[in-house]
Image (tube, rainbow, N blue to C red; front, side, top):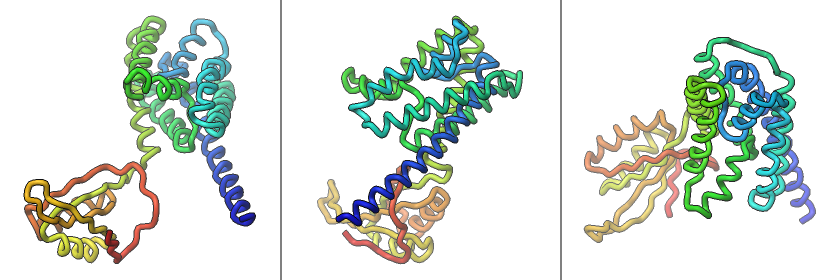
Length: 291
């Protein structure tokens, strides 16, 4: 038991060190994106960082300090909901972001607002994506949305969108409506890049196949695509007959070839394809698991 405990502690420390490393890189990248692209061109981000940018512009207060001050109440709210580790990681990421904002202050890459909006969104998305992927957050509105959405029946996405709508309206009043529109472009690009960082470019696909020739199709997929398949038992809702289902997870690049193989064997086969954001465990070759 003591040996297992030591191994668990060692794994936890290694994981924490890895997370902190990538959080540091992500916060530095995010700070660079804000100060080098967005702030000099009056383009803002959404959430608490966007509010901080507006307040900093009006009051001339330090942006990094405002980010910490405005995020602190939300971080404290997450203490019970998200756990101590998340709170520590989020606080750490925000401190590194604040230091990065001061380090890159007045470092301007371009005067072109379009370039600043596009590349600022890309770079910011990479930074924020790294932080989210390593179990922390830079934005208190995401924490608030998790706490409030269940009580009022909103989804997390709807709540964040509603908050950002007011933020961009405020940005339009302070910076002008063109800046607000550029800010929306930046936010859209950043959100897409965050998805790519979180999920990867080569996202997997979960495939379910229903066919009277399930055995033949399964063998063909194993032999020609070198993938593992799982046979599941089902009952047809209309016919009441037993059905064999095939389940497997493949890459996006393998999908067209799989569809071609299935159509060759059974053109009437039912195929359902779903995006898989994360998949864990080994991909066993030349093996059929039967449930």
